[in-house]
Length: 345
Image (tube, rainbow, N blue to C red; front, top):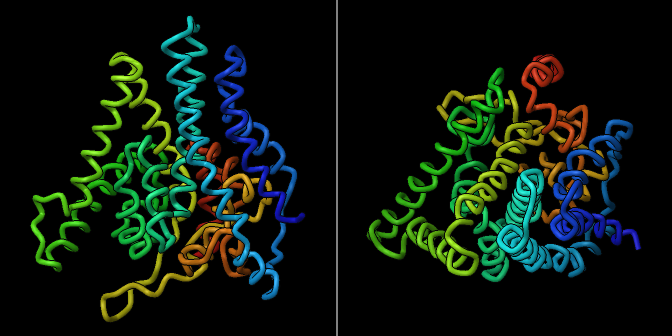
């Protein structure tokens, strides 16, 4: 019965569906849950540092319940998108409703889509990696599975990683740098892999070319089904979705740096190279993404068994509240810069 708490993660998609269905003031749907209700609750809670015992960990790893929770997000996400496109093309909506529903759908793409895709993208089965790419598609961010796994995890908390925010860098400057350079890095990584295999860059063996074609086909299908006029909103939903990811990237490694060794390489990634949050509601809502230190320490660990480390730096609030704080740079710097300096010292 303890595991049933993870059903709370479905409050988000349910709120998204209800917001699209009822419209009006409810149009923002999932945003009310993720960026209003949860941050308010987490401001007054601290979470727990307790880790699972070996027996509990073994039991949770054997349970398929945790996998099915992730898989269900695929039909949920595409159901949300279908309802979104149906509503904006078949109903007379106010400007408030257009804006609200677009942010609602975009947030679902980020929270249900990219967040779950991130977890499944680290799995080894072809089925789960296929689901990961399916969830990345509406964000037009399929390159993430290449750059994140082979770039970010290798270079995290170093100047070589575009997805690690620098000390004193505001979130808006980070968006520009991370979005553009991560995309270019994905092309570079795939090119290097193909070169090692002696495979032509200009072929369908190049996953980056595959992903661009799939994303174009997705846009064409949306246009054919719902009208070409919806394409700007489809792009808006994608941008809102991947900026959710980048906002999380920003807070996860802000100001933390791995040491460069005498041999020119960086020290091994350790739990203290990621900001952690033990605020339990946000942990459940985001499938334990907030225990990010353990994820980088051992990327193959499944979300249900991620651990707390005492040496990991802790965010003052959960991820949702921290993201909101990051959107106000003076506030973010006033809270976080002294923490970064103290931790680095």
